Structure formats: C-alpha cells, structure tokens
Length: 623
Image (tube, rainbow, N blue to C red; front, side):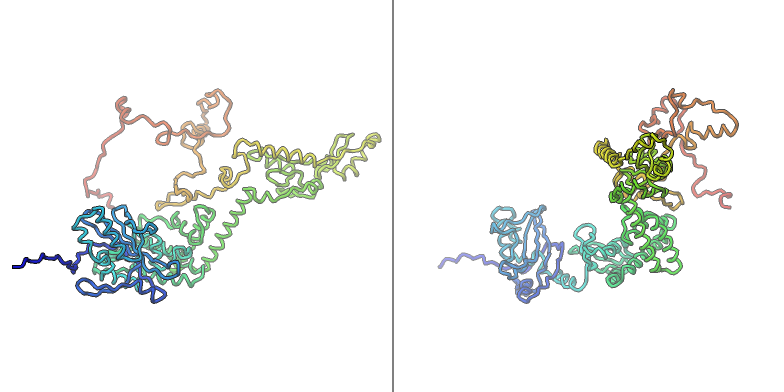
C-alpha cells in the first residue's frame, strides 16, 4: 500500500477583513489636468472574494489603525508632482508608527520615506516589522491584507465622503477648535485676503442658534446637530448668509462694506441686549469702540487719537439705526473722513514734537540780523533763535517760553537790541558811549548827540557770525555730553512726550453709570484718573488743608504745628504725595489674628445676623 502524500497548506486569500482604521482627515480629490495623470489617482481592485471595487486616491488623506501591541500605525498621502523629465508621478504614500510617528526606513537610502508604489511600501513595512520581531504573529497575519482596505481608502464611507466634499463645503477641524484658516477655507476665502478676513472672524465668533449644537465627526469634519429634530448636516446654520455676504463684499465698494459692518455691529449689540438686559455693558464701551475703529481700518491700541471721534460717531450711528434700522452711507463717509483727518493731525503733531519738522528749519543769520524775520509767537521782530527749538523769537517771548521746565536748559542765540529803538537788532557798537545800535539809529540820531572828539572814534562792527559759531559749538558739546536720555529732545518713546500727548487712557461709563478709564494698549482699566496723583491737599486726607479751611471759616486758629516747623527745615513748595497704606502699602498692617490676641477689646469680627427668615418680607417693604 502506497504511503500517503503529506498535506500542503495552501494559502487561502482573506475574504473578510475586520478593519480597525480611523480616518483623521479624508483629504480631497485631485483634479488632474490630463487623463493619464487622472488614472494615477484612481484605483481598480479585485478583492479575494472576486469583488471589484474602484475609487479615487485622495490627496492629504490621513488615517491610522491601532495594533494589538497598543501602538498606532499611520498612513498619509500627498500629491507627487512630476519627475525630472516632467512626467507626473501620481500620489505618494508614507507609513509611520508609534505615538512619535516614526517613519518606516525606506529601502533606498536616498528616499525620504515617501513611495509612489503603495504595494512596495507595504511589503517594505511588513519586512521591517518581521525582521525585528516588533509585532506578534497574529498582528502580522492581520496586516497581510490589502493596505487600501486596512487604512480605509478602499472604503465606501471614504469614497462617499470624497464625492460629497467635491460638491458641498465642510469645516475641517484638525485640533480641538477650528482655526481661522480652517474657517477661511470653509467660506472659500483665502487666508491672505485681508479685505475679507473680517468676514471669517465674524462667522467664527457667531454663536449657533438654538437648538443647534456641533461636534467633531469622522474625518475631522464638524457636524451640526439639531436637537429637536435629530437632523445632522455639514452645513453651518448661517452658512448661506455669510456666503451671500461674501459675494456682496466682493462686488461692493469700500464704503458699502463699512456700512454693512456697522449695521452688523449695532445689530449684534441689540441682540445681546435683549438676552442680557441688566448685565449689558453700554454701547460706548472699549469693546465696541475697538471694533468700530477696526471697521474703518484703525487700531486703537496704537492709534488712540481716533477713540474720541469713534465714540461720538458710534452714538450718531446708534441714533440713526434706532429710527431706520440702518446706518446712512453718508454718515459712514463723513466718519471715515473725520477719522482720517484726526490721524493726519495727530501724525503732524507727533512729527512736530519729535523734531522732524524742526530739523528742516535752517538758520538764516543774515535775515535775522537785518530784522527781516518775525517772532513765531507774537509776530514782532525776532531777535533770538533757539538752537534746539529752532524757532525765531523776540527777547520777551524767549524769556517767557524758556524760563522754566525742560526749555530752561536750551542753548539760545540772542541778538543785541538797538539801544534807541529797541526793535531792530544792533549792528554796530559805539566805542565812545559803549552802546549797541542799529545802522539807522546810529546814523540819524546817535551820531548827532556825540561831541567832536566822540565823532572821531570809529564804531566797531558787531560780528554775529563768530557769536553764532561759539553758541553752536556750545550746544553741540552739550548734546554730546548729556547724562541721561530724558534730557534730550523728547521722541516718540520718551516719557516727556507721552506726558504731553498721551492717547492711551480713555474715559468710559459702565452699566451703573460709574466712570472708569481704559487703556487700549495694555487692556488695563481703573476708576481713578491716571493723570491725578493723590497728595496731601486732597480733601479727606488726615492733616490736609481741608481742616485748616474749615477752622478758618469758623474763625479758629490752626493749633497744629506746621510741617516745616516739625521737620525743622525750610517750607516745601506744593503738596506731597500721599503715603501708601493698607493693601497698597509696602508694609502691611498687623495680622488680624495677632491683633486679636494682643488686644481682644479691639476685635471687630462679628457673625452675620439675619433679621428675616427665608421668603419673609415685611409689609412696609411691599408698599
């Protein structure tokens, strides 16, 4: 009897693969310009059960599956472009695994892990895991299947989603919350389009109406659910409105776009006012003023000069909107022109204070010595020139303007006035009488009053050029040897400039009518005026002048010793800053526990006392 032949374990193709993949991003269908390239982005598979499936290979597809070892395996696709000869490459694939997304090392050292042939990449990946014993036999047996099926490309759900994405837009959210760029792509707006970026932000900040909610579905697509009917859709409830607004803004003028934005601003305020009537902030608040400035192209953080007129125009817009439910476009144009003028005036003022305008002024010594220039302050004959202010002034105005403050240290160049007319600058000096005179007064008046021996003395010519050079050298040396930047001419960053032209703090009123000050640059707000400093002259301060004034009104004398007498020094000029105490002081008060232990009689802590029981109201309160 012949021996039995050994049984041969024939390979049985898999007909049922239990997929574990999860699609993170479906990607998009690539519309190839030519038919040969379009075939590269399509697949036609015959499965082991003789079923034929066909579909498209998406670009930007991203999915993963969780292995039995607890490690994920990822698949990504991208557009391959063309090779060196200009032929299309088709889609490219990359496989990585573990939580750190370690890319499977390629067979070719010159490759970066991206393959144009998915079958070669998959065989390389299985060989890599098998040689290093990284996966179990059961896992390798499971992975021995079609990778298009394992990762979900050859999946009816994926192909249906790709076909739907070609016709209908969807909000793709890669993170926990959609970004500004993702909202822009959803609205079919380029993220670099600054003219329509406000529309993207508006849709991003719009709350869903009741009873709509949203969640992140398969493929990172945001789905919108209507709770009362159970309807699920990719379409935002306000998508049609913002799409029509996008079409309008692309065709409308700049003024019409600003009109729509102002109407939306007032409409949003009215909508929030209905929901929160008692807690609603006034319309003239920092938030709405900042949005108003943004509509007209101004940043109130750096251009605070427009805040005042933004507040005034916002009131005018609200008044017109209450009557007609629309803001007149003429008001929009007038507001835009007004804010532009404010900015121009502010920039001109800044350039003047920073010295940019003064640098262009050239000193004309000839005209100044001839008396042909006028004082910039009183329009009389100028007799001096400030080398730092670069202004022509008469001697009186120069003394008034440079008698105190920062200008007191300026280097002046002053001409000698005529001793007779005291109007024109002196040009010659009489050596007999030791007087400086102009040409007219010396020739017509002064020479006639001199004796014979005095007329023989020749007058000396006053050399203003030498004097100017000496003063200019002095001013230059002084500018080079200044101790601190605060002594220089104030520029845009100096505190001296900001104290004169401060546009950071602006007054507002809250819902209770209490005034406060808001700083757009830092976002701070405070009740006390930022320009007011508490001092000893404030009413209500201990030892201030208010008590003295009250005693003086009653005819009483102030018996308290004066400050200069207590200190034993000369009297101080002006008031002093108030010393800090309590929470704001550098040294805090004695702790309550320590104070109660040392002096129990001073303890003021008492338990609260409730007069009424719950829901009990006296009769007199109801009337």
